[in-house]
Image 1 (cartoon, rainbow, N blue to C red):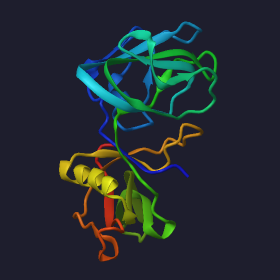
Image 2: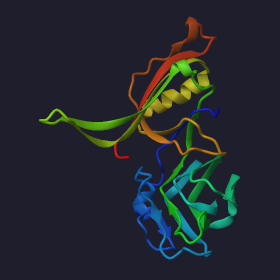
Image 3: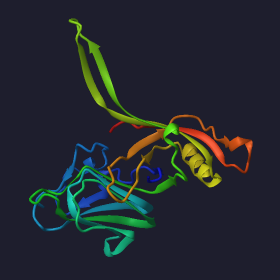
Image 4: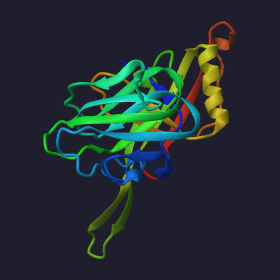
Length: 253
């Protein structure tokens, strides 16, 4: 099983940083955290490649890219507008039949990133992407919590009305993810990464199964909601640290 990861917020967060030679599409759909709304190209249903450019205001460190609910069969990702600038390992896909991709690579400082979309899974369709997340790894777990110490929950936010005739009307606002986890005997280095995330107070992405092979597309923007409670394991400075984390998904998705 892949180790849990906490990654920073999505660095793709405004339409002004997105450029394309395939028509404007709806750039905001790339980062609205709603995989049901896709960015779609305009006039690229054939074999001609088109490139989506992501331009940062300042040089930025990245080490993670993930695509959710896309239809790309052949594509590549490079940086600083030079096709020779590939990440290590590279983010190039030559033959694909899945709709989600997760890429992990060495931390790289970039001024821009290019997503070259060459072809689609089903011929004759426009290129489309539900979500594009570019981020940097904040912490990778030493060891995932055991099943007894991990409590994930996907719940429906809903409004329930009991009608005059006794029937029930239910309005579903949306699905939200939350998780609690208890950690035992973790290293000081890992504890220090966690306290940095806790003290920062910003939302971050949680990936419960980050794998470069057959990724299911599960990535959630979360906030840390409980207090910091890590203490020495077994009251011994040599045994590591015990503590708990409770995270809940941010609004808007």
